[in-house]
Image 1 (cartoon, helix red, strand yellow):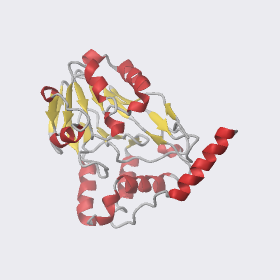
Image 2 (image 1 turned 30 degrees about the vertical axis):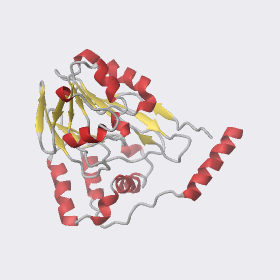
Image 3 (image 1 turned 90 degrees about the vertical axis):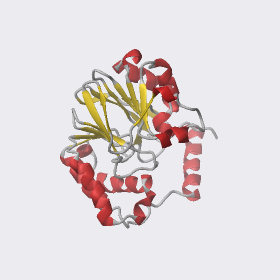
Amino acid sequence: MDIDVPVRFLDTIRVAPDTHLVRQLAGEGVNPVAMHCNSMVITGSEPVIVDCGPAITRDEWMARTFELVEPADVRWIFLSHDDVDHVGNLQQVLEVCRHATVVSTAFMVERMAADAMLPLDRLRWVNDGETFRAGDRTFTAVVPPTFDSPTTRGLFDHSTGVYWAADSFGAPVPFEVDDIDDLPDGFYGPAFVQTQQLVSPWHQWLDPAKYQQQLDRIAALGATVVASCHGVTLRDGQIAASLELMQALPGAPAAVLPGQAELEALLAMLSTGLAA
């Protein structure tokens, strides 16, 4: 049975000056909830593409990204980590953005070498806590409080207060919303915590005091906007509230994952829909 998971592009939004989110929503109509798959474009004096989206929607992702910036003007490509939904179009972006330098890490390049070796003369390695300048902007790489890849670093823009949190701070949505305050009462908290559990199964073995230090580090950034691959953009008090929710992760039980019974139920539902 060949089944395509529906993916829909949402309107690209401006989350801060010269900072734009290219948004996709996957799973509508198949699952009770849908999940974002976002990337970001910063159009400063030296434009930055932040993550390169999944290959499955390459044509439209490329079109929407380069509506915001001319390929020849792009100077930086920041990769938060090497998962396929973040580097799916990297090779194509490198081909058209001839003047761009890829901001990554040595470990990330090593892991991606199984598919293709990145051009070493077009790389800049920026580890957690390190800073680089992109024209009129200063960025710092900061590991987010939850992640599913050992190469993950978020990106903090000192000019705008935007923090790109990679897979952290994500949560599914039952329908398209631009603000978590528009979600049904009681939905966001449990959905948010479960997503952090899923993306970071190591939370079960965390030392609460040490983990709080990482949460405090993120809070100390003073971010006014948190944008992420898999969530709705958060602002101000929503950021603080989400960090507070993360305090429940150390020692919490693992998230319950779907199993074979759920797969069979899904296949039956889809078969009924296809037959109709």
